[in-house]
Structures are given as structure tokens and as C-alpha cells.
Amino acid sequence: MIRKTKSKPKMKRIALVFVAASMCFAGVLPLLPAFGDSQEPDHAHRLGMKVRCMCGGCNDSAGGCYHVGGAFSGPCDTAKGMLKTIDARIAKGDSDDLIVQSFVQEFGQAVLTEPPHNGFAGLAWWIPGLAFAAGLGLVIAVISRWRKRLSPGPALAAAGNAPPVSHELLERARAQAARDTED
Image (cartoon, rainbow, N blue to C red; front, side, top):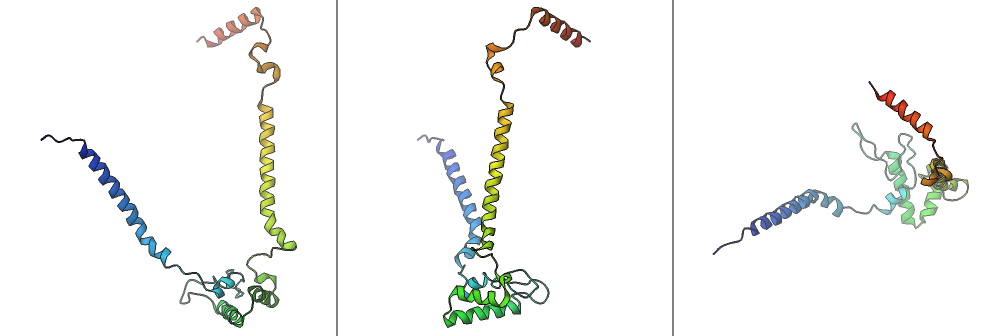
């Protein structure tokens, strides 16, 4: 019996693909628990993300306040108090908007992590889009001007419309080129 040797390279290729796929899966394996165990934050923390921690030591939201370093690491007492207040108001049955508005009445507009969507503060939501549109319009205008400036004139665009050169002028240019290129 004579065996064909073509199956050996094919087996090597299959084994190589299997090893590569195994290595990719092994590289992703440590990340799977991080995605599987992720829990949605509770209602108080989600609502705490809408109000700023008013401790004065950070610029984080009350739900995301986390001081790092030293012996203390975690949310500050102000953020914990704000989250407890939010939790108590949720348990009482208050709506999210009512809870946020109570913090606005207590601390002012500075407690909000994002500007309101109405009134003059609503302009903050429109400015990035307007700036992008204006910049895009400016780029298009500049490019169209450049293209108009670089296009050749109509008389020189066609190959047969070039002005005629006299024989005398052509010979003088050839003689000058010959003198310039001699050593």
C-alpha cells in the first residue's frame, strides 16, 4: 500500500488552526468572570450618579465617589450620607426626579453631574453638534476653494489649444539647455 503524503501538510494546517484557536480562547478565559459576574448597580447608586458628591475633596458623583490612597479608600462620609438619603427617599416611594430636585434645592445647580436639557443650560447639549457642523462646513468650503484654484484654465486644459512656439524660440531654448548641461 502506498500512502499519499498530501494528508500530512493538511493535518499540520488543521493542528495549527486548532492550537491558534485554543490560545485565543485561553487568552479570553480570564476575562469571562468579569463579564459574567457584573451586576447592575442598585437604584440608589444609579440615582447617585446623577448628583455630585458635595464633600469638596473630589469632583465625582455621589454614586461613584471613591477616594484612593492612605488608610482610607472608598466613598467619603458625604457620599455615603447622600446615598443613604437617596435610598430612604426611594423606600418612601419618591420619584427619581423628585429626589434629584430635592438635592438641587439643598445644594443648587452645582449638585447636578450634567446640565439640564432645557432652558439656557440646554444650549450646552447643542454646542458640540453645532461646532462640528460649522467645522465641517468650513473644511468643505476651504477644500472647494483649493480645488477651484488648482484646476487649469479652459484654454490650457485641452492639448491642442496651447499657444504655438516659434521655431527660432525653440532653437534658442535648446541651445541654452545644451550650454547649461555641459561641464
